[in-house]
Length: 129
Length: 113
Image 1 (cartoon, rainbow over the protein chains, first blue to last red):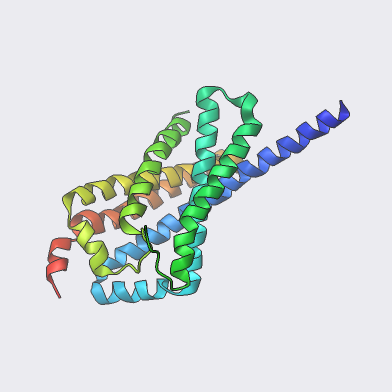
Image 2: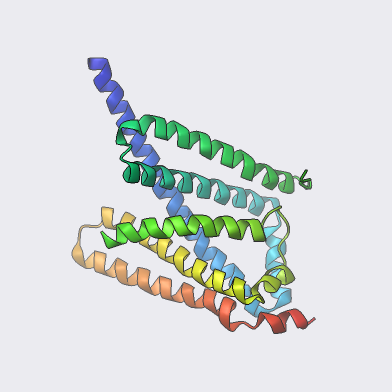
């Protein structure tokens, strides 16, 4: 009985951190969006200025940053879908399974989306079958 | 309530649009340059896509910031200031984005060396 209670408390705490993860990733992506708009606005300054900015973003540090943005988007989106699915289909009782399912989906998406980016970062070209 | 619902509606639409944007612009990963972006923006269909995408993304982002700020701010006057700041931010960045998408003549830019 006591163990069940403590398990539930642990579970609540995990839920809190997942919620926090969605907030923090969301704030990060929001900040990135504003930067992205400013950078693309450099098109107005002409080809030379824009391409100079793009050269800067081709550096490994910025490519790692891009990878972080992709991971943040995947985490935020998958968890958002999880929350909407729980609300829409009244899945509160399946909460545990939903969390593991979404963690798996996010892991697969990060692997699928991150691999081409990592290859590009390492200067390798992705060859599609 | 409205803010809560609109956050979900925009989320679903953004998910599809983000996927489309990534597939068209960034997959397979490549070095983006002026021609790359401007060629896409010369197409009226892409102009429309990006205008909607920009507005929805800004709304979703700033509405999200509003929800976070709302949880941590109890003073009514502070809440009003934050709301005003978010509206100004949204308007400024929407204008910046739309200048590139709609006003900036990418057809001319493509033709120019």
